[in-house]
Amino acid sequence: MRRTNRWKALPVALALALVVSACGSDDDEVDSAPEDDAAEETDDADDDDAGDDVDDDAGDDEAEASGDECDTSALTIGYATKSATNQGWILINQGAEDAAADLGVGELRAVGPPIENDISGQLNVVEDFISAQVDGLAIAPVDSSGIVPVVEQANADGIPVIAIDTAIEGGEVASFVATDNLAAAVTQAETVAEAIDGVGKVVLINGSQAQQTGRDRRDGFVETMEENYPDIEVLEVQTEWDPTAAQQGLEDLIIANDDIVAVAQAWDGATVASVSLLDREGLLDDVFVIGFDGAPDAIALMLDGRVDAIVAQQLYQIGYDGMEATVAAACGEPVEERVDTGEVLLTPDTVQDFIDANPDALSEFIEEEREG
Image 1: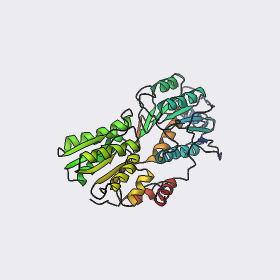
Image 2 (image 1 turned 135 degrees about the vertical axis):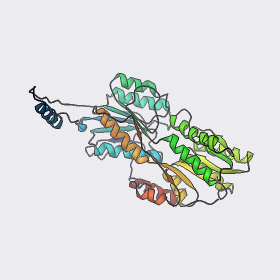
Image 3 (image 1 turned 60 degrees about the vertical axis):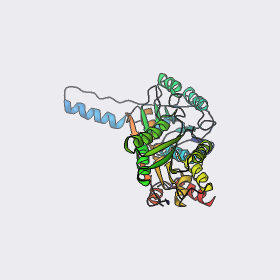
C-alpha cells in the first residue's frame, strides 16, 4: 500500500516569547511563561429632533458613521496559547498576530504555558491577563473544563472570552473558533476505510480526552467505524498528546498484532512518531498512514512519500479568525457563536496546492524539516 503522494507560512519569531504592539513594533514575540498589563477607550454621538421618521433615520446613520467606531489602537488583548514552540501552534499564533496587526490593536500579549499542555501554568497566564485588565481574552485551553474558573473570573470582570481551537466547557464564551473536529474525524475514518477496502485492524492514536478536541477526534473516528464498517477493528492508544507515548503504544500493538493495516493519528506529533517506528520495523510500505493537523513536519514526510493522507486544519486561519472575533468582542460588537475554520484532506496529489494557498512560514518549516 504505497503512499499517495497547503500553506506558505510566515517567517516567525514566535518561539519563547511574543508581545505585539500592532502599531508597528519590532518586538513581536510569544512568551512561554506569564507576564504584564492593559488599556482602553470609547465615544458617543446623538441625534436631535423628533417627529419625522426620515430625520430620525438620517440622524442615526450620521451618529453611527461619526462617533461610535471602536478605537482598536487603545485595546490590549490577552492571548493564552497552548504552545509557543510547536510548529502547528506557531502557525496559529502567527495568524493571531497578523490579525491583531491588521486590525490596529494597540497591544497583543501572547503567552504560552511554561510547559506545553500545563493547565496550572495556563491558569496563571490568564489570571495575570485579568489582573492587567485586558480588553479581550483569546484562550486556546489546555483543559476544556480545567480552564473554567478563570473564564468565570473574566466574565465577572466584564472581559469577553473567545475560545480558539478547543472548546471551553463552562463560563460565558462569546465565540468558539476552530475546526469542526467531529466532522474532520469522520473524514479521517472514511479515508482509512476506503484505503483498506473496509476490512482489517486499524490503530487510532488519541490525544487528551480531557480536551473537547481530543474527544471529538476520537469519537468521530470510532463511531464512524462502528456504525458503517463492521469488518474494521479499531485498536486505540491513549496519550496526552505525547509523541513518545504514541510511539510506545503503537509498538506494543504491533508486537501483539502482526496484521495491522492502517494507523490514524489525532495529531501530527503522533504521525511523525509513528512513521519513525513503522520505518524502523520495515512496515511503512504495508501500512496506510494518515495524520491530523497539517503540521509542517508531517507534510514534509508526505512530500517524501512516507505519509499517505493528512486531515489538515487551516491552522493560520484559526489564529486569524480567533483574533478577529476577540477584537470584535472587545469592541462590544456581536460575534458568531461558532466559527468553523474548515479542514482539507491532503494527499500527495493535493498537498502542493495546500502549501501554495497559504502564508510563507509553512513552506519554510517544511523545507527545514526536509533538509534536516
